[in-house]
Amino acid sequence: MDHNAKTAIAIIVTLVLAVGAEILLISRSDGGKTEKPAERGKEKAKTETVFFQSDRISEIKADVSSCDLKFSQWDEGRIELAIVSDRKQNDRPYAILKDNAVIIAEDRQEHTMLDRTEIDIKVPRTMPIEINNFFISVKTTSGAVSVSGFTCGVFDVKTSGGKIVFDACSFTALSLASETGMIVCGDTDAKSAHIAMTKGRINYSGSCDYIDAASQKGGINFNAETMVKEASFECGSGSVNIALPENDGYSLEYAAPDGKVKDAFTNNTDAKGSGSAQYKNGEASIKVKTESGNINITRSPSSAH
Image (cartoon, rainbow, N blue to C red; front, side, top):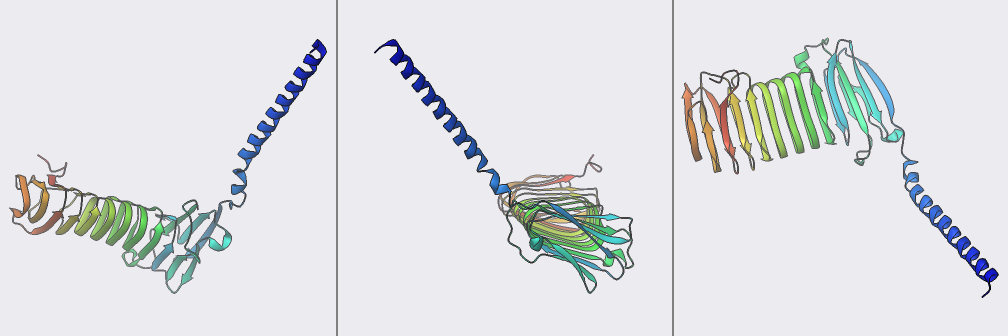
């Protein structure tokens, strides 16, 4: 093969390789773009603000899915709801006034976790009705419920999954139930509280005259700023930690088949199984049970000595 033939072959090979590389580059570029059309149908998040004059309103009811709800109070004289959602218009939550209640609902309750929907609810600090006669109920399949600096009569939350957080709140009655997630009540004052969790931890800090809390799988932490009158705690799997202030006395009934019971007030340090104990006059009633875990009763930091 002469020199000119070799040169021609080399040029052809170079051109073939160059074209092949270009085709490969284009193929890879097109492959990266195939992920983008999935976002074309996604709705842009929109905010809708709804106002209700607080005259005669005594209740807020929310029944939504895959939605985060935030409750707070302000100095304005109206109830305001800011609904932020990237769902299609017909699928977004809406709010209407029915009788004396603000109803928050949606026509379809089947949404994916990718949906972003948030509702910010603001309620006047002072109402035409007595604030302790104001009721709020929330039902959601998933999503966080956050309540801050809020006072009312009854606050009821039921959710299939999601974190429930209360901070600096005061209620006549508090009822919280969740299948999975976490329930956290900080600086919360309730005359009575009922808290139920299927799988997750319960943390309560504040004051409560009557409380019953149960978690099938997850521990319970209860820090009382004032002494309870009656308390019941039950865990299927998890430890129960109770911190109490100095008090006039309580009667304790406990059951911890697979753990230890320690009580700083009665100086009970290594009890096992089931039993009872009394501190001072035994007036308050405390019942604690865990199938698998320990029971610890300690003095609150303010009363420890």
